[in-house]
Length: 292
Ligand code: MN
Image (cartoon, protein in one colour):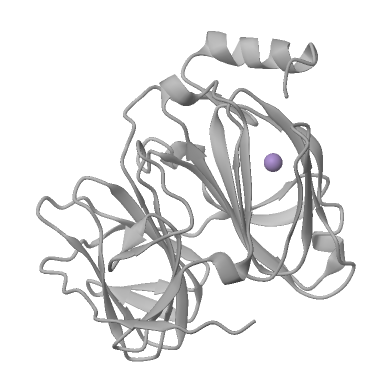
């Protein structure tokens, strides 16, 4: 299937945010032995509220991904998996099953609880992608689980007149609505492909926490270089209406922004609630088989 790609006039950013901090991430093994660069970790959850975690995975070595993520539970937030390359099979206890492939997205609202498995359906070649954890507001933490597979051809995309390609996974930008909208956290999740030497101006609502993760090439934001595999936490300068990003090489990066919940965050592994008591309850409910 071919897609016609719409050309959209770039919007100007009057005042850019700068880079508050560059994060290298840490290599961890998760699931049954998958090598991951954990970019957004626990200590940054408050600063980057409503985002709880960002994992980047990418390997051509089957030994670093083949074991996958066998059945495990979640409660209290949403997981968003974006596969750049490869095939991953999802199955969950709410009865959903789907195959996420090249360029596809899977959005799962764990809500009051699901158990799921995320297993590679390939035994060779590159597997590359991201998993983002987006928090739910306290009043929605025990909502019914929800799930959607978004194949690559259903991810809205357009080209800016400067040649930048934008995929809108969540939120809205330049008048284009993304695949998923969330009223409370208003997540903006973009994949930008920027030709070398081009500067893109990306509007971001004031007051939203925001970061950029570069996964190809190299970007410069307000004079600070952001290399591939690095996250730049953008500052919350009052009055800034977006971010100006220059690509010094052919560059691809994620832009994430969201409205902070400003609620207490209590996490125990795959459960993210507001209080310790709710965490004990989550463990008890899971053990008692009360998840979907
Ligand atoms: Mn999971």
